[in-house]
Length: 248
Ligand code: SAH
Image (cartoon, rainbow, N blue to C red; front, top):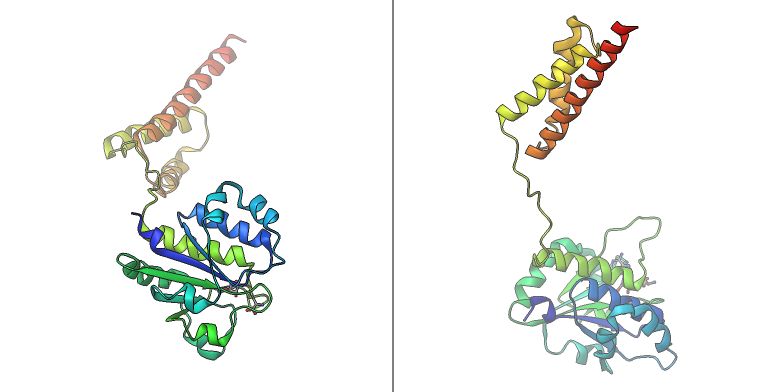
């Protein structure tokens, strides 16, 4: 079982079906599967929810519904409430990045919950009182409140990346060694002379500049071959051009 299956996303009295659907989509992007809705509203547009869920209709259909937050989190050890506001005991809020390892440690063996509030009124103090942790997503002072599904996305992303499931693609090409790099630099040196790119006095200075530019990132064997090919082609074009000049 995936550790992220132990993380329950709890929405308290969400208003807009579209937001619920978008939450499902964000959950799907981050391998989260357990959605709970507290006191669903009779006015919610579930067609909108389905539309915005896109490929995450499974999460939407598998949602659990509870009458109260206490019931939705009853089986959870860590219960993290999210809030854009300060005050109450929100002042001890963690950013989601700092919270992710704490969450994953508990989620290894237990169910945990992340609780999100109403679009208009957030979470009430008595709901925050049920929480063991408060999370605040860092945001601009100009407007601290995120859209409900965006808040789920940010928290979900931090949990997903901290879980280390995703393997970033790695450079497969071998790194160039000094001998190959020096062959490449000497071709460039020759090319700079032949194309009269620089005067003799400035040549070594230019070469140091090139060395600095090319060592800002790792040079691979194919990188060196491309750079060498470019210099060799320039040398060839320059020799052709010189030949043509001599025949004129
Ligand atoms: N007007 C409400 C904001 C609700 S936004 C209020 O003042 O609380 C809907 C929900 O998204 C919030 O209850 C919270 O769960 C989450 N959310 C929005 N912005 C957030 C932020 N900056 N940090 C943490 N959670 C946030």
